[in-house]
Every structure is written in C-alpha cells, then in structure tokens.
Image (cartoon, rainbow, N blue to C red; front, side):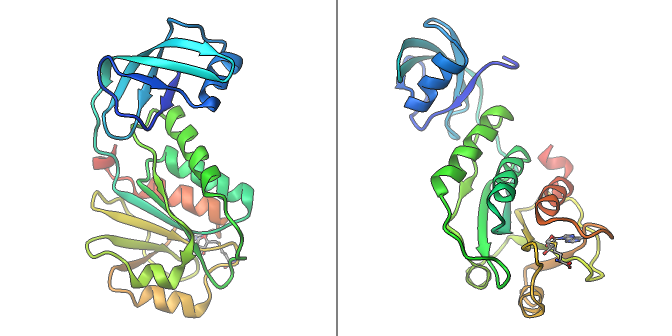
Length: 235
Ligand code: SAH
C-alpha cells in the first residue's frame, strides 16, 4: 500500500486481534489525517511483519483497529549500530531521524570529553525514531540506549562486532561497505581528544576510517558514514 498510513504498535499482530491506538495515533488519524471508521492502515511492531488493519473506532483521543491480513513478513534489517557523541538538540534529533531511515538497529549516544553533558529525553528520541520508521517503511524501530561514557562503551564492547571509528585528519583508509555486524562511531562537534582517539584506536575491534578530505559536521558524518557502510547485503 504505497503512501498509506503505517503505524508502529507494541501489541502482538495476528488476524482478528483488536488493538487500541495511543492517544497520539488517534489524534493523528482523526484530526490530522481525517481518516474515518472502516478505512485501512498498516501496522507493524518490529516482530510480526506488517499487517493491514481496519479502523473500527475513532473518537476524540481514542481509536482502535482490528487486524486483517499480513502485508509483509518480518525481514532481517541491517545489523549496524550508530554510536554518536551527543550533539545539540536539533542535530541529535536529525541524527536519530536519518539513522533510522538508513536502517540502524541501535543508537548509542555517548559522552566524550568535548560533549556537553546534558539531560536527554529518551521518550522523545524514541518518538522521533518511531515516526522515521513509519515513514521509511521499515519493519522495526531501532533500540535507543541511555547515554553513557565512550570509555564505558568501549570496555563493554561485544565480541564479533567491528567498530568503524570516523576520524578526520588521521590518514585513515576510506570507509567501505560491510555486511557483517558493525557499528559506526562519530565524535562530537569539537572532535575526539588525542587521548580518546588513542583509546579508540587501541581497541582490538576498532578500525579508524575516513569519510573524505573535508571536515564534516558530526551529523553529516553520521549520515554519510552510515550510507557508505551499507553493503549490497543490506540493500
Ligand atoms: N572540530 C573537529 C572536527 C570534528 S567533526 C576538527 O576541526 O578537527 C565531528 C566528527 O565527525 C568527528 O569526530 C569525526 O568522527 C567525524 N568526521 C568529520 N569529518 C570526517 C572525515 N572527513 N572523516 C572521518 N570522520 C569525520
């Protein structure tokens, strides 16, 4: 159903199941999109594929669906994570939206020496990711982790996942596509400190990579790096 409304739900999806919409979804369907009872929308939950569902109630702040038939089975998505130093609010929002469109499985905000520690609203991050997943026809929403120090993340890094660390001015080889479990690390606006770069470089699963001769803003580096990591297998 190209262009039709797709909504993320947490409930199990199976034929005949009735699902209540959130208040936000009810507002979106009724007030923003002017849908009416009897119309069909797509639902996905990250586990059961995408299903056609009929809108069976729609009142102020309230809506529900009855699940009809499956449209697309759940399919594997790129096994790539984005590790990014927290940026200012608008730039962070952009990174979450674009990384979701580009298919990341997980987003890990990190704190570095040149990151201004700040309070983050994970619920807001999650809402941005849900909207981007709905819009980009993904079947899953990335996991968004609590921010943590870069050093802690490196210490707990899982075996079997390469970490491509984007480093400007480091004469690193260009980033190349992969189909293996991978992660991209992007630093803050002020860049990594020399000590951080040494710690990153010294990690056995890290490969320093270049994104070209120009110095990109962190949000551009995240988007460009993810696009270039995408191999044929992630198509
Ligand atoms: N202020 C720093 C630049 C930081 S750019 C300076 O002037 O040197 C923010 C982040 O984007 C960097 O930490 C790095 O992870 C990434 N980045 C930007 N341009 C890059 C490039 N050409 N190659 C690799 N990484 C890059």
